[in-house]
Length: 225
Ligand SMILES: O=C(O)c1ccccc1N[C@@H]1O[C@H](COP(=O)(O)O)[C@@H](O)[C@H]1O
Image (cartoon, rainbow, N blue to C red; front, side, top):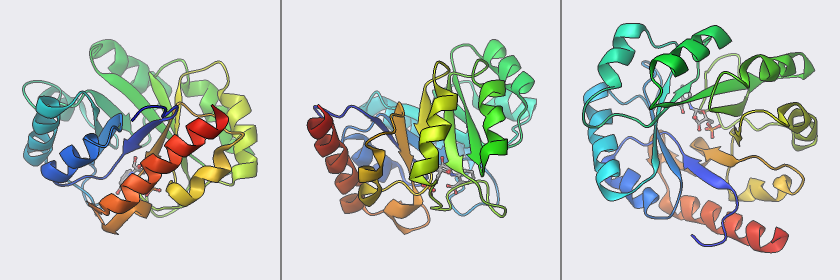
C-alpha cells in the first residue's frame, strides 16, 4: 500500500480467513473483540487462532479489544502462541491501571480508548496520554462501549486534536469509512480505526468497502502529498 500516510486498523473481525484477506490489503492492525455480550465477541480460543494465523502470514498488529480485563484473564491470554501484540482497553480502566499494565507486560503495546462527548471529556486525554502507547479517540454512546458507527463532529475534532498534541500517538475511531475521509483534511491522527460501517453484518466485513477505505486513504495521501 504505497503512499498511505495514515495507518489503518480494521476492527471486529471474527473469521481468520477474512482477517488475513484484510491484512493482505496492507492495513497495519487487525482488531478482535474480547468483550463478552457484544455482537462481535470472539471467544479466547478462536481469538488465538485468528492471531496465530495473522502472525504466520503478516506483520500486522494483532489487537485484542478488552473492557476492564482482570489479572487472571490477562495472565492467561498474554502468553503462548496466538497472543495479541496490542491490548486496546475499552472499559473504565484508570490511568494508574494502564500504567501498571504497561509496566507488567512491557512487550505488549497498550492503547486506551477514550469515548468523547463534549469539552468536559477532553481532560481525560491529559490524564492518560503519558501512561499508554497510544490513545484511541472514539465517539460516545450511552448504550454501547464501541462498534456503534457514531461519528465525531469533524469541526470539534480540530479542538480535540489540539489537546492530543505532544502526547501519545492517537487513532481516530467512530464510524470511519471511505465517505468520511474528506473530513480529515485538517485532522492528523496517527491512524484510523474502522469497523461497523464496513460490515455486511456484525463481525462480517464487506471487502469492497474495506478496499474503498484503503483506496480513499491512498488518494488522500497523494492529494496532501
Ligand atoms: O465493535 C464492537 O463491537 C466493540 C465492542 C466493545 C468495545 C469496543 C468495540 N469496538 C470498538 O469501537 C471502534 C469504533 O467502531 P465503529 O467503527 O464506530 O463501528 C471499533 O473500531 C472498535 O475498536
